[in-house]
Image (tube, rainbow, N blue to C red):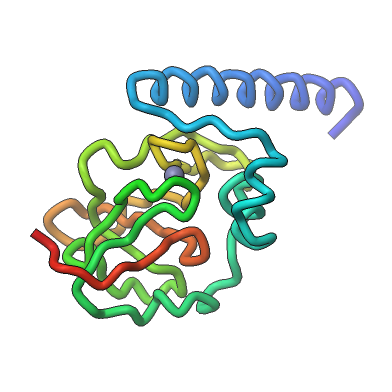
Length: 162
Ligand SMILES: [Zn+2]
């Protein structure tokens, strides 16, 4: 890639990032939101949770004990206690991350990210805006969706699921 091409490529990438932010702000604006500064986040999250939720990082596969969580209950966002998934929406995808084929209504919002250059659909908690994982189209029936979630930013509570 020559110098000019690289400059155009970088400009394009920056434009896409700006567009991402506009889309993110727009789809969050309709819902009740929690706003925290980075310092406030650091006080309530562990380093690993901060890395995933705020810096949009990804945990090491098979590192979460929630991969094998099979009890009845709900999965909440560690950042704001928003109820994201139930045990009825969970399935074993074999990928090493807790996986769900559905979320509670309006629990998450999506945007496209280009971290691996090719576009991926990232999703975040609709209440605090924290990053949770990526959405793929290779899940089971009836939705065929796979919400590939970082276990470190989920809090499981064993309880009755209605
Ligand atoms: Zn949240």
